[in-house]
Image (spheres, rainbow, N blue to C red):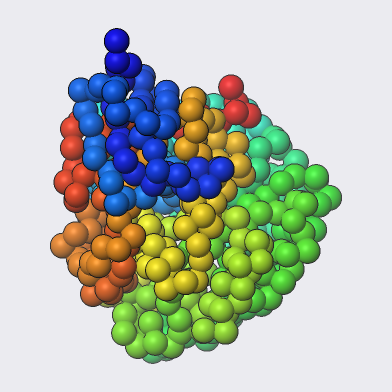
Length: 443
């Protein structure tokens, strides 16, 4: 009798820990049950994947889905729709919502909101704040928690922890890796006058300069070493930080964004104006090339989108009154696949930065690799597909992308979350099946 599976993905080129291999993949009960020649096997759903590459499901470890409180620009349903359209199978949502995610009740509320509405798997960071520092060790272990997020630079709500004493208290509480936005708040406040009285967005990287980022990262690394606490430094944007972080691999891991790898000042501010604003800023090409060198040398561990949508009306407010942030979860993979086709990184390195790396750094259970026994999270890509990123493709409620009009080579053809085909050829399929991401440190 022929083997029976719930799903068979047939004939694709799988990128596995052992290399690339053409193989059929059989799925049972949401897990990869077999790999190889399954020509005699049967399944109610068969995905023909010849000429496609099968990647382990892409994990975006930095998104802001704005729910609760800010749903006019995004929510869990629209954010995860964009994720799976872009080939992403799991996301980590940030805590700067309204209210901020700083309590067990707020975290449980987000987990409940995602049930039946998230199209991909999801976890939520708990934000460090003055009022919860003594409870962070308990909060980071709750179901659905991705860990602790520390904001050393300005953000919304009550999440700012700017001084060394506060940062040290956060690092002393708990044991999981802490994700950190490292900008020096004191320097930002001291330099605020630079952007008053008619400044334009071109001044954004002048105000939030290299020293603003470097100073905070340097302080963080010293405090992390003293606390013996692992940290993950988000959206690193400067050559100077990369040189420092390369010497601190024992205590710190590194994340960059597709925006910082792709855009550069002043051109992006010329073209996009306020829509080029994010924190930390897009800098000149010197820093962009330093990020690529660090990526090539193995200093960079993860690429995350820092998907941070705002409406066009909000972004069009005169600088510096409007918010900073760009949508990015849906374009994360197309932008990186275009870099693969341009020869800037290999497909294997892309997999390490978007699947294996996130799973390794955050100790994600059963994800990150294509292997028997793992979750059947698969991102099917057509490396030769030529597309143009258009605004009407973007599912985010904000309705825009900084990459609109960009021609790319390489495109997500299908997204599979724990054996469920949730996107195929640009079409969302079925009811939302997203579940809380699980972590080995909390099992």
